[in-house]
Length: 256
Ligand code: NDP
Ligand code: 8X3
Image 1: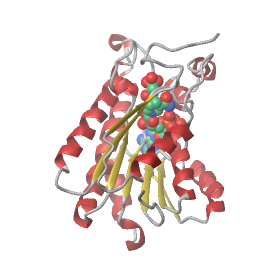
Image 2 (image 1 turned 180 degrees about the vertical axis):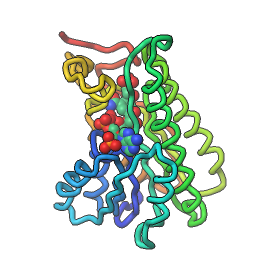
Image 3 (image 1 turned 90 degrees about the vertical axis):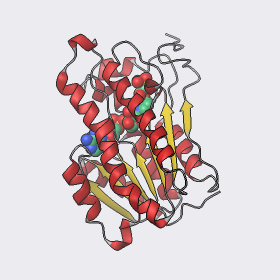
């Protein structure tokens, strides 16, 4: 098992859900964390919570859709922080569940710009350093939605299918280097995801998880931690994990 102690770990989308859970697991293991999200106050709250682990933190209030900001934020890191070992491309969102021909184009752009382009900007900036230093690991948050399209999921599912393709492509392009690439692809995880999807409609968001036991953000963080701590010759390329109450993107066991 590889030690995470003092490894520099970038987590995008750390202000909530899966990203925040990853921050806790990696902080506990003694990593040096660069926490990225747009909501500075949420990052600060998380940082206060993580202070009990006495780990080193660097907060980056950043919109991953903004290429210039991504480049400027990462290029401004001091020597103590610039040699990133692990990039967790987690920032992402869904917007709406409309039929494609009735879709909101602004929602599409937000998903494509965040889930695909934001992931690409962070990867493009940070992976060359990993290659030069001869070590590194990129973890991409895909989804069951990237494996199976569900009604109304259209653009979100396409964005996660793109993550699946980019994960495969990056693995191929890094062959011959020690840099590892993993896609962690969950089914239903209860986070702020559905609140964001339904633009703050909490009742509708809650119904997504009603009557079943969803995955927790901690379940996903555990899997990510497992993937990055395998011995250097082991690359877990893809993990699809779903709740026991979920069989496919559309087939779930609801008890009410
Ligand atoms: P949350 O809504 O709880 O968290 C999403 C995180 O992404 C937040 O920290 C948010 O921070 C950040 N984020 C969104 N847009 C941007 C942006 N433009 N720039 C920087 N950060 C951004 O959802 P989850 O934790 O569930 O989602 C995390 C990832 O997991 C996503 O990629 C999602 O697609 C994926 N996923 C989620 C599943 C689920 O069922 N929940 C299942 C499968 C995959 P802020 O708003 O402060 O910027
Ligand atoms: C999130 C899981 O099924 O809501 O990617 O799209 S799902």
